[in-house]
Length: 502
Ligand code: AMP
Ligand code: ZN
Image 1: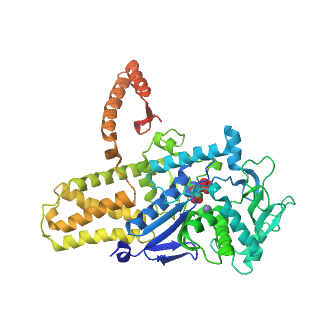
Image 2 (image 1 turned 180 degrees about the horizontal axis):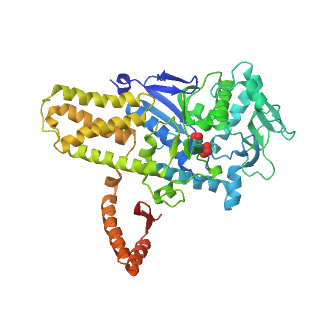
Image 3 (image 1 turned 90 degrees about the vertical axis):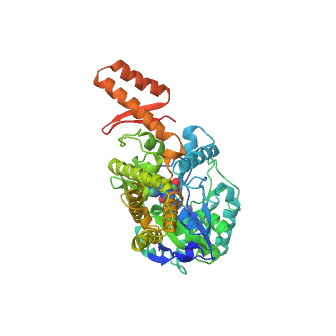
């Protein structure tokens, strides 16, 4: 019996806004698509949160025994700078700025994105298709929408006819918008646009002479519209109907709404069974965003080298920090919360180590009720994860189990109260949920950082002593020689910490 048969899963479907029983289209298999990054700049910590949320979804489904095909795209055709289908291409703009070819920009930031995903132990998807690799399929989908009479061509560009589509299919269902409200709230077209209505969106744009990223098509030399690639690549790899589509909340409208419209127009089917949306990482209540200037990059977070950071934090402390909040709630960044998470993660790591070292002497349970209680606690892990991937509640239960483990390890309680079988099962589940489902790897065991921390503590103490003794020559020498070795000391309110230079 597969775990998914034993432990049912409920997910909060944005389409219909309901908590629904998760039932796959094909037995035992899950098709899942998540909108990937636009690779024209470094991913910031907000982006990381969304990819981490869906990493846990992917990991848990896999853990339950589903065969998951996870597709996460790379947007390497630049969206236009203002998202109303006008303006400059973001990738081309960046290419000019950095004096590189657009495809060099794409490669550079794709590599950077992969590095960051690895830092945070976010698993690679099963397929990572690129928009530029699927131009032919995008042209085919545009043609099929034109053939249905739901798009129109003007001066070499093709637009989706939202009002026409809305005659038969409700546009705005996912984001809870009504077409008449959208119409009254939309800006008037300024006469420059070829669109018939401001609600229409581009499927194909004719390229201006200076536009570098361009492809031939039946309508013009140009490039595909923003929303099209996800409709094309999801249906190509997962079929016209698939189980899960994910992305950040900010993509619900217009991006996901347009994806639904394109797919329905082209395939006459509801494309996605469950829409899941991750909520935003905020700073003082405002969405972290590159354009607002309140974002910081993962390596700044690791080194502590940013004005809003008191010190550096390890990737796993940050992962723990993020998973302590449910993916559908906003999460506000603060130094205090990160420091608390750092402590919490250290405590959990201690419990993991204790669990790894402790063996049961063998035999049946001496106290049946304790045995039952311990088992019931471990089943709660499935209940919480099965309740729309509730990681904060899962972590709370892990700490409860960890408390039992600690008391067995330090002799405050007798491990023989529970049976050997129960101990082994619960311990293995405890470790698997932490490592395989939450993806929290033990940073101290994967390298020599434990020994390194200890050695650095000694050096930092020696330097503090030298400073107290006003032996500035010695304290400077310690700092400078560490710097030569690529280790940077940072003096903050919480004391001195160190980071390794890239
Ligand atoms: P982009 O490269 O801008 O398309 O963003 C990639 C992903 O990051 C999308 O799913 C966005 O919804 C998500 N995202 C952007 N900003 C934030 C944020 N502050 N918090 C969480 N997710 C975000
Ligand atoms: Zn998308």
